[in-house]
Image 1 (spheres, rainbow, N blue to C red):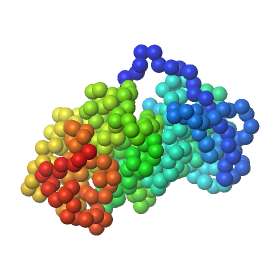
Image 2: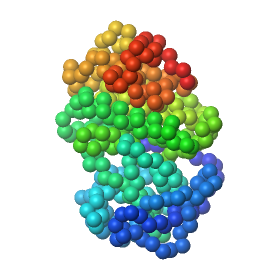
Image 3: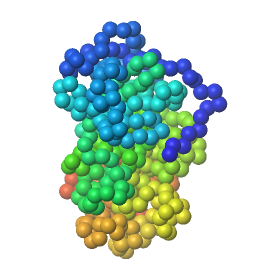
Length: 362
């Protein structure tokens, strides 16, 4: 489900493995020694990487030999299994597919990026394993599956409106941290419902940094091959490969539309949706913000069990995030305060006093 435009002669040389360093965790999880060299940052300095390293055998034991019973999910990257470490800590073990140059790049990117970030709404990397041609990443276990599962899955009750609000706010906070509090800033590049993990309180954690990019604060954009997921790609990024943090904002807006409508970003099975969710929703959002009637947009499974003011604010936010012009989309810090919880902000702010125009400065 990824869109990939590869260079004609991609490098196949594997990255230098990360340095083995001790951890404050249990010593039985640490595999010392060896001749691993420091993982090199694209900005020139070796990372001071303070996570556990594991042997392949330790992770095989933790996951019951990567049994099907422990399988949490799979995709183009490989497989994710639940595991339990010797001290009882539950983890999620992501095993990248063997022999893939793209897998090597995603492994290095994920270790490089996620070792820099520390936020309650971003998934935590516990450690990693490099064993011959095997590459594994070990994360905290987040127990309540993904947003995609709860919105689009066929099992279980309908996700209620307060939970949807909480997920939107938490995801926005995590993204705002990546864009505005990390230096160099981090562009995630693959924001989507399946990359939002949930705990039992429906607190969101942004996951999967395999496609993420570091960019210096003074860069207006990064030119890169187009990668991401159909239905979530910002138009300027899909057409030119010019990546900015506003590309993530667009993807976040698509995710808000999923929370509002219960629809998938792209689906031939949904009536009246010949194009993408964004194309289908744009005129309906305009109408809803003008007349205050949300019926054509709202997930029918919600019925009337939502707050009209909160719904109007989330629709306004989604409309702003999926604007065709990247310059006119909000920053994530604006998204995460204003549209969702009015008690957190000055409700007379000019950002949301006119929901029909919604003009955001860059």
